[in-house]
Image: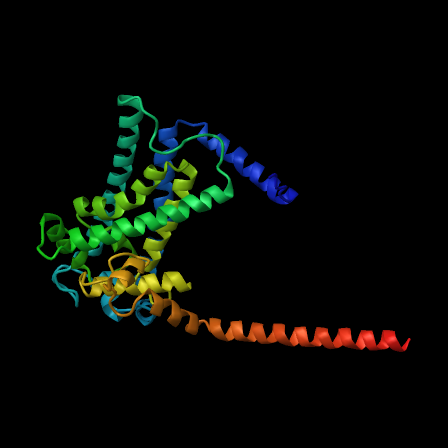
Length: 325
């Protein structure tokens, strides 16, 4: 069946396709690596820097919107100085986080080179000048995020927080969980081994399995990076029903040093009973109450009913007038 799109939407899509064609006409590996680094810069490095400046310049205001108050200020997390005794100093957190992101970009480039240059196989991601249709993009983004949720939950719970303990869980505890009050730069702070296993693989592997288009992968990466930056910022004013709940669960996971809340969305935590401080259903209910979603829905329903009653009365009046005439 052929569906004709509105002219304005069609023209915009053509313009987007033209732009993507120009970009993707460059060497695929160059586009992929620069795209990944560009997204990490825009959605993690820049906002995290702004948050750090804000926390440092006006700590009295920052404390009022931090979930863990003064202890969540990055400059208070120092080696042997301040309330977070023994925690990593902020500039070391930034350095290791940046190293982890560069390492993962290098691994991704290495995978592409291995497949295309050494094994003479097709690339891990689709790199074509034809832009995928909007529905295809949405479908693959949603599937990738759900697969990421599953991978992160089981890796996080059964490997990085295994009951018996192991080499990876020890490293994860020593690095990531040395910060119990997170801030955005700490979103990528971990030993490289558990970081690659927990952050990189669940983000990259779903797109490889689905073999999504490069632009779809970059869109998924943008969503994930923005989510990690905001929800691990330590702020209690993260906007949105979903993001607000994720931020609260991530903060509780860090504060409890990994006793629950093993994946961002909280769906599997709810199913397996590993939620701490309330589950995803409670979070959505609380956020909905906070934003008065139910009240607005009730008001909208009452308005619709009142409009319907007025419409019926108007129709009856017209009929009576017609009969009289």
